[in-house]
View 1 (cartoon, rainbow, N blue to C red):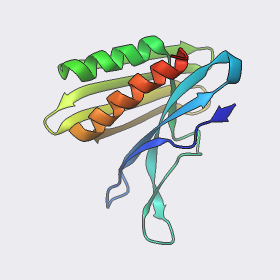
View 2 (cartoon, one colour; view 1 turned 180 degrees about the horizontal axis):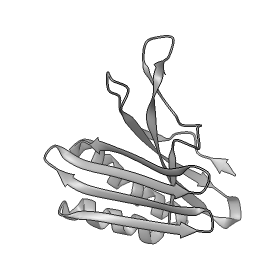
View 3 (cartoon, one colour; view 1 turned 90 degrees about the horizontal axis):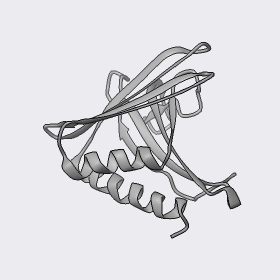
View 4 (cartoon, one colour; view 1 turned 180 degrees about the vertical axis):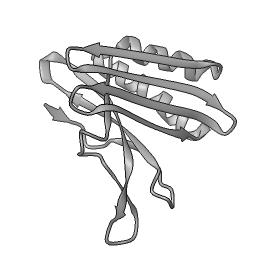
Length: 151
């Protein structure tokens, strides 16, 4: 599966290592089309060699991955355009379930992803998005839809 060069990432590191981060990744499956994944990861307790926070991107027991289909993207875009209330997404399969909630917050948006599987139990990750990050997210979701339909 081909991945595009860039992922969009949002980091919310905290001094007490209770922060979180999210990333969007658009993947190209050739003739099968494009798929969009939202991954949220908690902050690790260790820092990198420069003293910067690190996140559990590759630890599948700690992060949450949600594949966003066209209807999911449309639901999030509708929410971002209205800037009111909240949006909830829920996916379930034979391995477990994944959910996402986004709501309006006084300084932008709050995002909460969760999953429940037999292997990892319940994993929940939340963080905020600034108004500017919400605007960038809107543009990226619109572009992802165009790519999914080859328009």
